[in-house]
Image 1 (cartoon, rainbow, N blue to C red):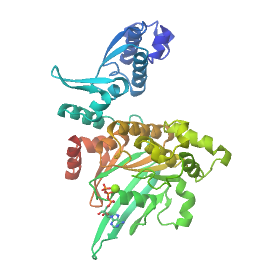
Image 2: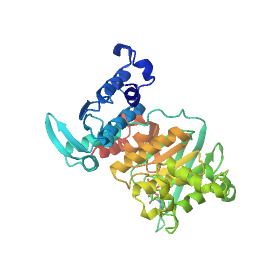
Image 3: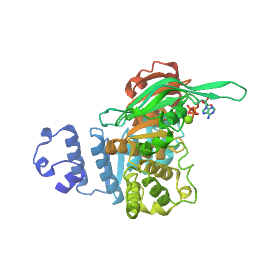
Image 4: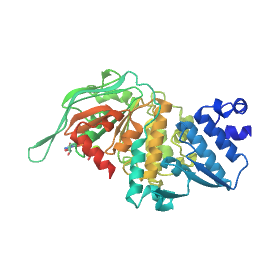
Length: 393
Ligand SMILES: Nc1ncnc2c1ncn2[C@@H]1O[C@H](COP(=O)(O)OP(=O)(O)OP(=O)(O)O)[C@@H](O)[C@H]1O
Ligand SMILES: [Mg+2]
């Protein structure tokens, strides 16, 4: 019985087993109840909103327990409004509305490509609804853009001001979302922050020190501190290279590169951090799935232990299920490494999931900014409202 309490995620099971239900918190009571239901390994378990009272970590544990029961042959009926829980546990899903079945099918299909309007709404709402949870307190500014301006000449003598007098500050451990319509200047800004491009006015500071103003020769030694995950992951990688070669090269760029003999182990550790098995080391990136490739791209960017990670549309090429897994990974990496993130996305759900703060861009300027709940809860600028409305469909 103690084992069942432990499996259900109840801390100090030996102590808790001797308490009365009224002496437990709601979440603990829930877990004790789950333990009592699974202890006899029944052939069928009906779990009605089993994780609603639980925090994310414990909820994940309970869902893991339900998954184990299912794998051991127990049929599980999971009643829930939490589509994340459905995705983790269920093989099949039945969507109910007003007592009727709206849609039914394999989980991956129903959540990945819902056929009915109502299911689509549920999926969209679920993805907008969830934030990153507990994240590190933001620290000192690590990356600052001041009065940034970038003008591009167009054919025929015209020009376009892609970034037009823009200020941005990113603090240690913070995740800042950069959203805006296509052409609003997001990628240009990301490239300026990375010092892959030079501003026509203004400057970028890294750790409070000149960054964009330095000659590239002097920047090279500092580049390990700021990395970009480009929109086309590994598009810039030689297709003949294996993942091992890509990661070994990336590891060599850090401030304290591991000895050559240790780089395979370090590369395998990087893969583990993005939840890929060691076997992937000997694959070529093009033979991997889109999601695996994005994980390799993130591992590569993390190899030099950067303090800032710039991610340009990190999940837009991936299908919904894979997107969710990559976003979970980003949230986990934030928590575990404290790396600050600048996340460029046209998808507000993506920003909502990962970021604390958001900057809305239009015509090269920031038209609205604030915390994610404030901006998404009460959008003030028409551009923000349009972006939010577009997301609902
Ligand atoms: N190298 C360049 N030469 C000329 N114009 C450019 C260049 N790079 C960007 N631009 C122009 O600057 C503007 C902003 O482009 P940018 O790529 O920053 O937009 P974006 O917000 O990233 O858009 P998307 O969401 O489509 O990726 C656009 O008008 C674009 O055509
Ligand atoms: Mg872009």
